[in-house]
Image (cartoon, rainbow, N blue to C red; front, side, top):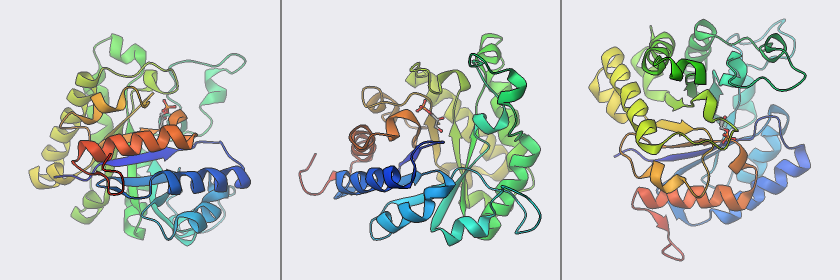
Length: 278
Ligand code: 13P
């Protein structure tokens, strides 16, 4: 039995005051919930202040990215040790917004401008190993573009991404890892992936993990779905066996909607609220 995760990726939202307010509201709104691991991933600048709010609660804090070196002349980057020093337990790696894999190019932006962060399979693999070796738990993202889905390439693209970042991992690195399947066309679009299809791809990912790392590690690994997860679609997703939780953008920016997602994930695991039985 895998404990579900509900992780809020705040992306580049919330200055420190707003971050503290939102974190406090999530702590309050999720008090008493059992059976679901809760993660908040604020922007780097707000990690310490959010950790101050959550440190006496079961809520874990996550970075949204990191660099694989420990320290040095890497202007603007943060290391695993720096994230740990802000109270992080997790780090999101290889998000499509950092890989430069975009379904829709925003008006006024060229594809080149949107790809400036430049993560790719090779750098994500290095980051995963450095994060896990430092004692962080990586949440590593994968997912296909709409054009790739339309060409029937979903399984090949996702399988290749997962093989690339798991290649050469030790048992300890694999055991620390969570994978997030985030189809790029579903991120921030309101167009959630059909639950059965999301479950199928998460199952495919678990199969790749089993191939690379063995069945035992694959059975224990949490595989999340991300992309327009909302209170009105979360139950359908969480009911399926290979989806172990959500990596949530928009709906994590309001405490009400994020706490509704947390409650649904807890309920799917047979948990719920110890106070109200909900
Ligand atoms: P949305 O929930 O806004 O679609 O974002 C998903 C995501 O990218 C989480 O990492």
